[in-house]
Image 1 (cartoon, rainbow, N blue to C red):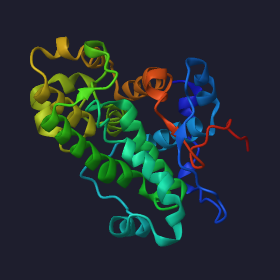
Image 2 (image 1 turned 90 degrees about the vertical axis):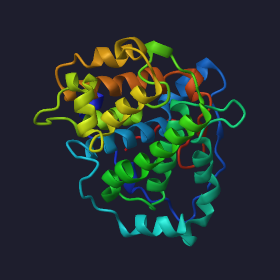
Image 3 (image 1 turned 120 degrees about the vertical axis):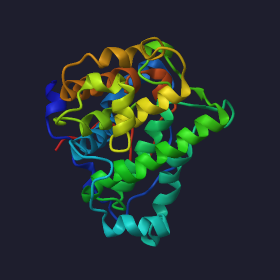
Image 4 (image 1 turned 120 degrees about the horizontal axis):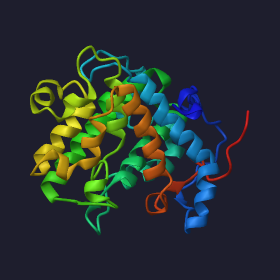
Length: 281
């Protein structure tokens, strides 16, 4: 595992913006391929990948049906969306939520839209609406519900996959549930990577594991042999351990999503996820 993946991710979820912070409407900053250097050096990139890795650690070895703590602030969020004292942040944070449900003109959806929803959750952590104690709930309660909604939209409207690599891509629409879902399965007593291509194993365990839910959805949406319509996943089933699957998927996510101009050109930057270079200390 790469050193950057072994180290503890930055705890961006406990950052509370100062009361005097000037929130900004996020805008696109990556206009050409050379701009990708700015993105990879940015505070936004560091905070975003740190958030993804923090949640990856939080759900390790846990089932979707496990009990988990939900902070009082998160419970209030359900009723009030964003507390009154944080109203100034709403226009900035809301942009990421709007960007997360696909393109209304092209009727497409892909990993860039998924990243916008993760950025939305990251921003809620940065303004203190969600807290570090909510790691498991963020994935199992909020993100998993988002997946359910997006799958319903994909089924109902037959949304086009945005930027899909076809049979050579991991999945037409999602990536993060494969990362977090493989983390859930690390050190599982009997489920190994080879089992996710076993229909019986998927049917019996999908309600507990995001990875298996993804596999079930793929088999519902696609026809033909699994090895033909999902070749990349078929290859992953040969990996000996979930830990290695998880490490490989994190590297793949960085390379195939976060470092691809067609995906990141649509990402927007504001005061919470800024384009300026990462600050040390």
